[in-house]
Length: 286
Ligand code: SF4
Ligand code: SF4
Image (cartoon, rainbow, N blue to C red; front, top):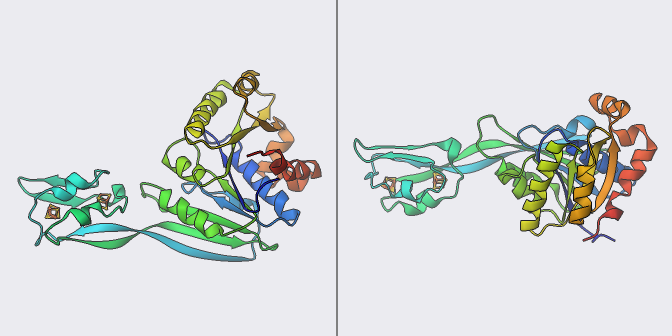
């Protein structure tokens, strides 16, 4: 029995393994059963979960971040702000004196502002992207984080998207692919991580990397194998050896690919899948 409020991240070490298929079908199945749930599309570089749902209301909020503005009339070109910036976001040359903020690299940490003893730095708001919350006919929420082109990091948008999800019985986070910072920021907020993989050498390699990362973070995790039948059994051997729960298998079938390619959900098309996804939380033990 899961706690009253529970956050699940659906993640994978690489894109295209079926992470969104799992997240959207789980959300649909819980919603249809009347369970209060939110789906947060944290893949802010290319969110697409909304394609599978119709909403009755939507609300968009712009997400901004502070970035420094340097007044060269007050600046003594001491270089301290450059030294304090961990993200190499301030370009500085002492002679001839040049100082420039590289906004694309700035993380809005404010260290440069604190460093400057000459009052030469102020801050401005820079737009990073938007978080849109869609209210579905059953009042469950889909929150989508979408970053603007050219923005360096989706992390502030992911945080804002998860915050916008609010307090629902079940919060499902469709994590960004990979194991870099956006993935870490998403799974750090989860009570449990469902890793989606495929039974191929590439899938296994990415899975191992994700498992190692989650173990470092002490995050409980289970695995869903997608496209069962297309590769080999090595992933099963790995799960057994590492004592990682296998939560579900999704076969490599043309009918499933065809439903998904049409922007439809397999849990909508086939009651068997609706029941399987509805039963997924019961297989999670924390
Ligand atoms: S706010 Fe932080 S990241 Fe941005 S330029 Fe200043 S020190 Fe660097
Ligand atoms: S710390 Fe202030 S005075 Fe020194 S280089 Fe940066 S902006 Fe200029």
